[in-house]
Amino acid sequence: MNALNTIFILTIAFLAVFVESSFGTFRRFLGAQVDLLPALMVYASLSAGLTTVTLLAVLGGLWFDSLSANPLGVSILPLFLIGFTVHQFSHLILRGQTYAQLVLGFAACGFAPLFTLLILFSCGAEPILGLGLAWQWFVMTTLGGLLVPLYFKLFNKVYRTLGYERVPETSFRDDREIKRGR
Image (cartoon, rainbow, N blue to C red):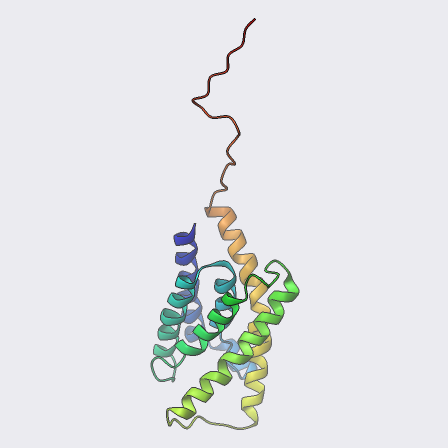
């Protein structure tokens, strides 16, 4: 299931980047673009291994940067730091609790644009700053954080539909002979 999990996560990441870049009605309505990858990174770091987290950070960051105004590779480090941090503390996190998912989603979706902005400043880029930035950050943090429980529900439904449940082995082996008699 690990390879299947990685394939599903990367497919959803590709579709998320496509949806972000193709459909602009939500962006025009709210005045802010919602980033779907940090929320997906929270899900991936709680349910998959470090290899999947790294693949999602690199591929998702490159896909996102290739379709945005960001320089190529800027989004990789913030995504990886989110995934690595959550993965390191995943044994302490109540993965199935909606409250924990929301808190992690809000933190990740709030951290990603700020760290990306810091990287842009350190690279010498001059992004546009103003009061609109606070609104955009608020919308990205709020809606991105609300997406994390939806990702958990989506992937649970996909795994129930396409996956299979392992049958627990019984205590009796097939090659065991039971002798009955008097």
